[in-house]
Image 1 (spheres, rainbow, N blue to C red):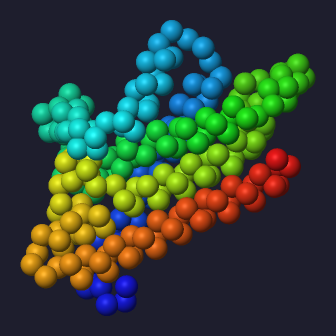
Image 2 (cartoon, rainbow, N blue to C red):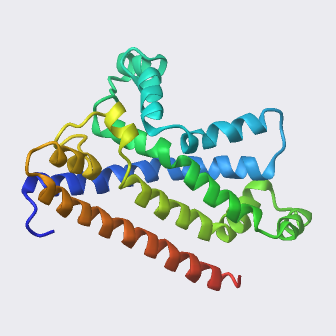
Length: 230
């Protein structure tokens, strides 16, 4: 790991930053989505649930292509962002974060939703009879009790971002120093004659980072469940 070139270390740090931005923006939305799906019954709920989990079953390249259609310069949202705010997502670091966020969104929603559905509904009902509004119940009861699923979802989502390839290369391309994350750097190394050794080194870095993320999620989940008496 210590013999990586500065460009390769740049890919490692870029991967960590892209994953952090993806989880930072995606996790709050995932918590809100999981709360809506677990607490409300409404027309179109099944459609929303299917759309949320769609990136899990679509090929990542297809997801990246759909992002190009929607958030590209000529896309319905991408063109508005470009014209009104001067924001360009395609082929940028922000675009790589968006692609990672979309791919890991179902994982985070599922983790949070399972945690929400495991909460004893009697606690929220008791708080309601005592006059607590929905916001009070959410902040003081629901979210604290769901914290193991939220944190684990965020950590697993972060670890998943570290290995995302198809959606990122399709939507953000493979630009060194800007969108070339660790998986893309491994791919680029394999395209160069004699680059197998360098690809192996980068793969070991990816393996270590993913393993740390998974072990950390397991440890935090157990600690929080023990604290909550589960």
